Image 1 (tube, helix red, strand yellow):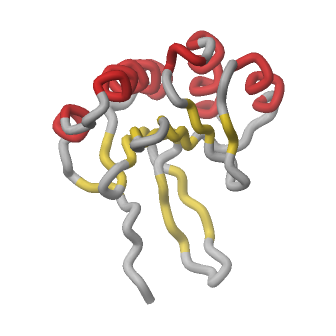
Image 2 (cartoon, helix red, strand yellow):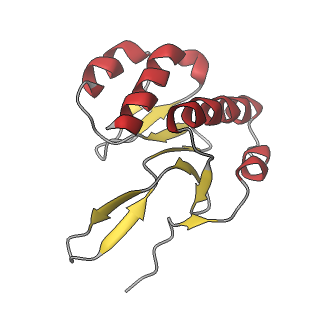
Image 3 (spheres, one colour):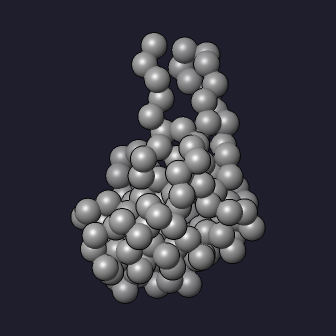
Length: 132
């Protein structure tokens, strides 16, 4: 069976964010770390090569094996910030208030830059995702 790429590792989050080429995305990433750190009350950790995550969520795969991923996290991609917040009650109503964003079929939230959204609503989304 293939080795999972998205596992918790010891890479330095600050070093990873410093390497983000786009200045706006880099500054937004620093702001998102602060929001998520406040919600989780835990330090960030790298998951795989490009996800900054907080906490751990265990789940079962179709083959019966267990796996884990960060409970909340994000990744500063070239085109957008991708948020991994899971599904929770009230998420759809908050997303309607968020501002300019896209959702993937898998439930990932895509934001081009923080200036495109209401950061207070994003903060609420992050907090509720953490508590879910």
